[in-house]
Image (cartoon, rainbow, N blue to C red; front, top):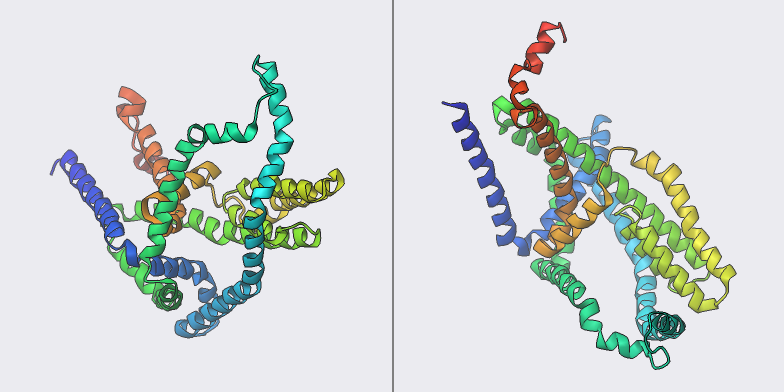
Length: 378
């Protein structure tokens, strides 16, 4: 069969596979959340289970021990943190209008000076009325985008068979996936096309390295930063410090985003709380020290260079996943982004070897495998 026909058939097959995957996501989106969570937990804990298995502990018992410890840790953390988060969230919602009014009072004189500077009437300028009159223009597009994301999130939340069913089924699904992990991976490997098996396995290895670096690395970094910021801000006496610190940690899954937003919010709250620059400096120093420790010790030790995902790419993937498939989409966004990054890199590499990039000179270049063999390469 001509090479072109084989390529077309393979392209049609993988395109059909992609369409089928998207179709399954759309069709079963309402029940996928426990399975996606279970798969993520299984992927996260599988290396620990493998270590116990090497200690002559059966995989069934190793999976049960590691998963039980993980569930106890998660639930213990939630039990300790949930009351504080709930109370500080209520206080923040109640105080937010006051902070908004005080911020506009502080900003209004500078806005009047700016109006005078551009030749407008600054004396009669009212910032509150200005925001009300231009709210549609200022926030219309952003609101539409946010609505699509949060609408997707809401749909994803409704998609689960209720919070408690997700709570019950997720550990069960995770246990069976961990227990059957070697069987699943061997089954999938056996189904790979024989001709391209080695190439596909190399690509899967690169994808696994990036995903594991992010899932097991960046999430660990975000957890440590969240706990550190929450404790430090609480000790410093910042209102809503525990909530802001944890929020900064969660958003630190996207490098730099969490710490930057946490710094801005906490410094603003510190200023309105005390009005003293010294106190604002203390709060700012907490985030600066956190960034120093993250950049020089935590991230190099835990993550290293294995992630290779640009923050903007991660941010886009999370927004796109949330808008398309809700919570499920956000959970699979990073793995899909990592896989896409590896595949795009492979495609670019192949493109640079092709006549489309090299021109007619590509036809004169010997095949790499043949050249290595001629030179005696192993």
